[in-house]
Length: 82
Image (cartoon, rainbow, N blue to C red; front, side, top):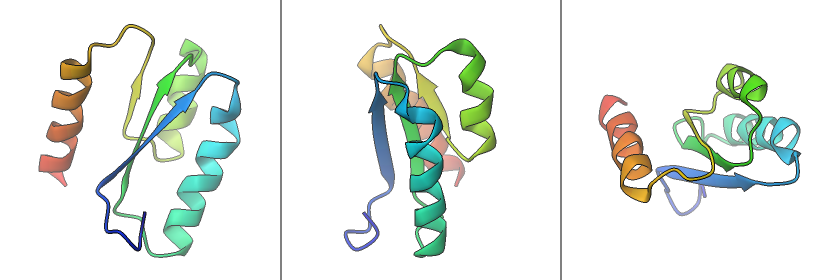
């Protein structure tokens, strides 16, 4: 992602990996110089885990049933703020 100058990484979680894998990814991005890359997460995320994800640096969380245009609009708004 860093080498290809991406703006956003989207992660889909359905097996509870979001509490371990997402923080590891964000830490790796920071260490390797990719702190400006926006990370968003979608999938089956328990409501009580959302604040944890925001605290580690996730910019947005999209649950099941989120309409693509709604998610896309939110991501574009996040990118425009940065």
